[in-house]
Image (tube, rainbow, N blue to C red; front, side, top):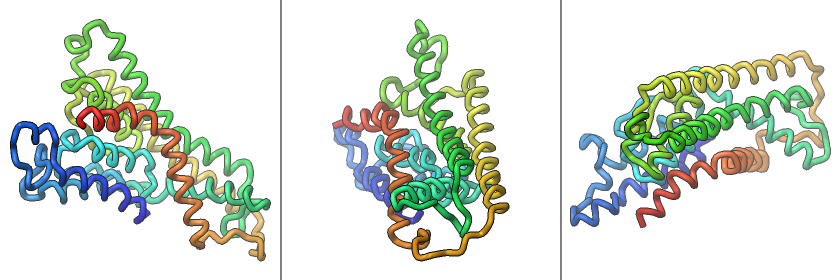
Length: 280
């Protein structure tokens, strides 16, 4: 979890302290970094750190405007909520990390050629299916909601007048919609507040996303725990997978990164990554 947090925090720190290249073009000095949307009490560095902290822990508090972050910094904030496993959210703890642990144990067991086990209890079909359901509902809510919002926007004849959602069109506008559903599904509460989200679509859409994204990841792991509790204990043997080993830690971390990259990479490329390259 600490490694994941550091890998998110360092890019955010770097890009916020570099300042905004669009402001550089105006001939304005940015010795304190990108100060748009920041409080001078905190500055760019502390704001970047807190932005990553609040999205990794899903506590929803902010000390700066996330919509004013540089594109890659904003992507780090989104990733913290999309992976939703580093430190864990308020009220649910490390419950999403538990799901990734189940999946990593299953993958490791297949690679080792033996039945996966956790705490002496066999990980079988029910546990894997439940973990996969929990693991896939999060990206479905985020990607599905964002896709629906993007479709409605593009199919509306005059969206700026009719919908009045986006003050920032193009890549950043997509990022605002992407962040909104990400924050709702991760039960965070922060937002890219350039989005005009006080409408029926956003209130109902993000409400449903928050409801399903909050309770299904709680119900699923409880069901897995109940299933494991009634299983017969299997004593540890020489072939048992050590879940407190460095090797398993690497497998677990790569499981989180690969699943996160495969599921959310297209959306991140369409939003913050595309915006970053358009500025350079």
